[in-house]
Image 1 (cartoon, rainbow, N blue to C red):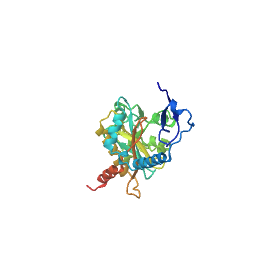
Image 2 (tube, rainbow, N blue to C red):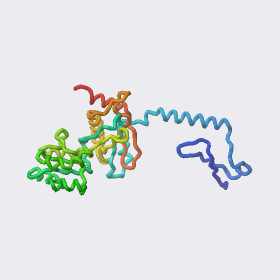
Image 3 (spheres, rainbow, N blue to C red):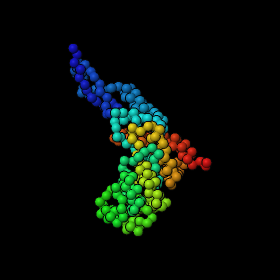
Image 4 (cartoon, rainbow, N blue to C red):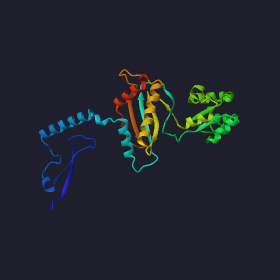
Length: 277
């Protein structure tokens, strides 16, 4: 039986390192440790190397539509549960923040604090909000004793709310009638918050936001993504020199590799949003 030995040496650098060539042990006797290959083979390898990366650079299949990305992410997550799908959009400004109401997504991280009293406070508690009150709630916020992602208030409680303006203001959580967080319609405001996800552009224009779970239907994930794009466009995303409000769109789930969405699709949807009706 011929025994096989392996000699590892670099011929062409690839993503995984080096080629491995296998030779019968009898043929290796008397050969130098570094096996030489002909100049012609080197040129062929070099030509293949450049051609491979040129084709990869121009490969349009590397960029997918939203439908394709949603399908691939769900396929990657087969057998996994409780995996959150995250959308990352690079825009042309870092001065953008607010809340997005998802049509098919209830954020598990929503924690609401409600400044209310009497009947309004009872309605808030009946909807599952535990942080409800007036002066007592103000003290908890000042002492950082509770966690909250949304703050609601009725107009008659603004005297109390103003006392924590220095705490809520920098976080963008000060109740405001224009945002619907200062209202007497507490029930509607709470239901809206449970469907709302906060977003903020950071690091030169990156917006990252959860758009669903891998268990959700694909069309629900797609509609949530479209809603994010629509909200960012309408809330003041700056149009770049190329006429596009988005520089890059990526999707991934927890611990998953990000997939890039084709901007041509985003452009067509953007035109549909901005077109007069």
